[in-house]
Length: 375
Image (tube, rainbow, N blue to C red; front, side):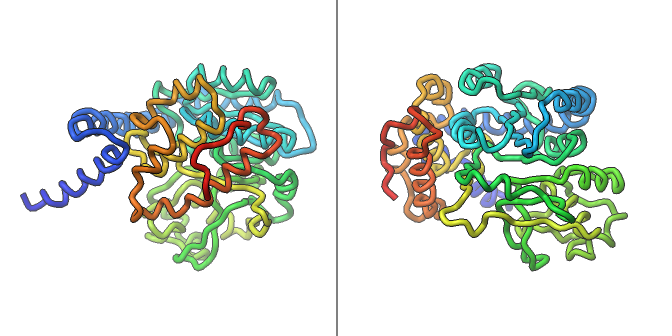
């Protein structure tokens, strides 16, 4: 009984997004929440099984052979991971990237119809399909580790919801000298007092990072507790036992452990494009994280706006379940709580949509005016 109030608060917080989007109490409690709970549990189990049972035996050698068969060229190759239910974010990203760098798609749990849809619109773009259990994907850190371990030469990794408007940015991001990676996004850590790179758009000096991985027995995956043998190296860069780059986390997030070891050994990273005006790249974020059942109303609004952006009948029909019962972005806008701080980012989202709508690479798919696009 002592824990009942806190349990009720957690239940109410879990149900709030479902209620905000228009589900009744009965549907939320008896259907939406149980389904979301089961899906979350399965995905967590499946990620472990994917990593331990499928990744090395079924993905590593196949990817090594795949990338060796790609045509060589002077530009850095840009990999974009294709997650399920993200085509409305992905296609504008890819259309901007075309001509800026050779593109390669890595399908990570995406459905067969989604890949067919993509290949019809972007014929000739190579696709590598990761082997995963049904209804699941590899953790992001596992995919990054696979690329670093197997790729020959430096390469770019671009989030499916990052939008590169400046054709010179990717060229400027090529690592030089003692740079192990270059990023277009960074945050400052209060733990170390220094900035650290975010993973939305990265250029890797792959051989350097691969050697570090082999020498220290680590990779790019999320790590809850670093091996004790690394304590001295981590302490030298302001981390160490119980200290992490992200202030709100109690683990080393994707790439953080590898980056810390690289910095301890004298390697550097560079931030490129942060001062460009207008921004050379913009990022949405969080579009493939978590279950659609528990998405915030603001996130659903962004989904609906990008669906409107493409105005593709098949995607509109196939992805309707993501925002159900909401059908239009204005419905989410009308339901918003003015006290919700997430909506403070609305002008940024509208600015991004406006740039995408008017950019010549997006063609006729964004020719129609977007509803509710008032910054």
